[in-house]
Image (cartoon, rainbow, N blue to C red; front, side, top):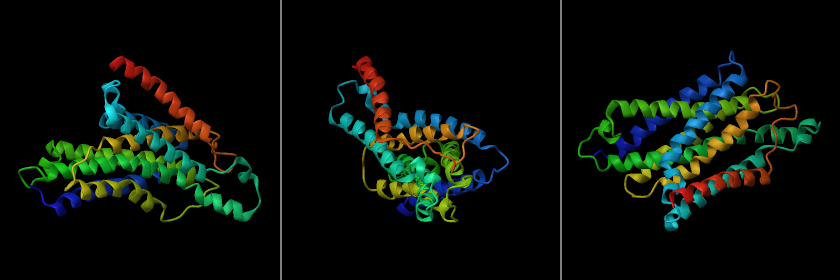
Length: 279
């Protein structure tokens, strides 16, 4: 059995180091046009959605209508993720008129709040990491040897895979930051932004590991919450694909509450069709 400190420190090192490296490298790729970074981010977000939906048991779609309360719970958690992003987005993005105002207090307020777009993406995406950390630590507490390689369940290749996952997932967050803060003429830029993004995203894996070592739990719920960040990242990065995109000139588009509801309805309509298929 791997001891508690080794399990938690192992996931901390394997998570935070690649995240920090990824955030600082991507935000300094100033020679690459934002449109290309955004397209790469969208591609990564698509894979993140597919990969995480597997861990989220595809929101219980294979159960059809026979999944019972746990199935209902996963759907509710999924919708809670979309709701959380709607609330964050509402606070982050001002009305278009704010970009045109000369009131320094209003401009100062929203130039700081726009950071909530990448921060919200990092926080919600990090919930899936909470589940990953929990799963890893649960495995670490049960292996018969003291090897972290055994705890990762696939030897060195599994560790390399985890490091790459954390690096590339952080790229999504970094590109969202570049689009809405880093290359923005409107947003306030602070030295603490990137460390905060790394902590919001990465420390949840560490907290999951710290808890999962002793507590057994169905981590599907964490993945179901975190996967919703792929929707949000894709919507926001789709704006940045536009070559005329520039914060401070009427961008970004403010997504209404009704817009998020429409997103959830659209997903659930095809999801319901799949339930009948598996029922």
